[in-house]
Length: 234
Image (cartoon, rainbow, N blue to C red):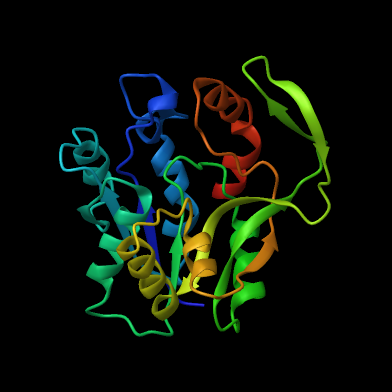
């Protein structure tokens, strides 16, 4: 399953509340984004890697020097704009049937076994799909500033979306273009594909494929260093 990888990394990470964007936070001798890249850089089926960064990104040059094979493009105001910009760059040398993986820059615990599972599940799929985790916790809907419980929700059939999200180039780019033209901002690639009338496949992945959003998340990731990061190297 030969594929092209896109990493949207133009966000400032306001909720991370630090001077350094979360994707560049130090982690186990490198940075969060470099751990997010590790499984793909080690995969011979990854044809190329494109990272979308902000125009004033002062942190990428140091990372880029260690990964000179990675292409960069200008990111956009929102994630969807960044992914769309990267897809437009790919358009000159990919076909509609080619696979595109989109992975969060701040999701450093992605394991090779999940990469293998995605390939096995989606290799012949006409559209694509995404890594996700079936919800196990009891869900509550809160109301008001005091966050009182309004209802307990049925979790049956609910999944927590993760990345990578994997789609045919000829499906993903038109879906994002159509959404943005209609002034609709999808929160992930799958939502844009869903709006285009498709039904992406859900692929069950590991629950420890954590996305760093707050400093507490980074603490959790650091606590997992011996486990997930060792798997990336094994």
